[in-house]
Amino acid sequence: MRRILVFGNSGSGKSTLAKQLCDSHALSHLDLDTLAWEPTTPPERKPLAASAKAISRLIESSESWVIEGCYSDLLELAVPFATQMIYLDLPVEACIANARARPWEPHKYPSKAAQDANLEMLLEWISRYADRDDTFSRRAHLALYESFPGEKTVLTKNGDLGINI
Image (cartoon, rainbow, N blue to C red; front, top):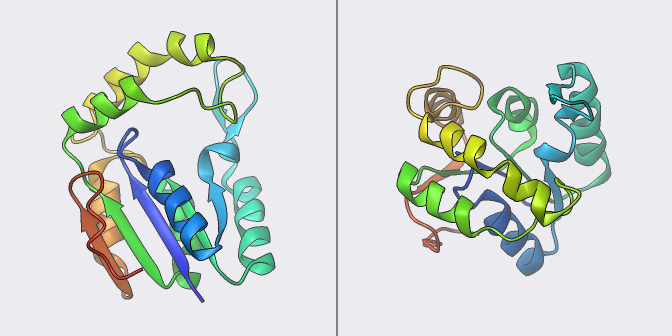
């Protein structure tokens, strides 16, 4: 049984790592971006209870999984069930480069053009990772990581999979 939480700044490589883990170990996958937001303009966070139900459904229906995202408040809901935690703590510059190079994410945007239209806002948001004090911040991620009693790893560069998976 593998139950892995993958988290870090936007652009840190969470989705890429989660997909690699899922493919190599036949794990179920939950991208928290898919359940955290109301479909409104501008986007608004769903109530925590609504997102919690979706997380519970995965935990109850799958013996082995990866849950990934930048939402420490949502990740905390899965901590009691997780066997492993991977924190992608890449330099902001690397996250920005990854965001610029990311392919179209059809589960998040209706088109590549819509994704690209959001890029400058995303890059600004990524750049404030260390300065923010919210559920998406480095502070919140570090606190989540430090409080986890199970197996945990910090990765500081993409492709650094010198971990026990």
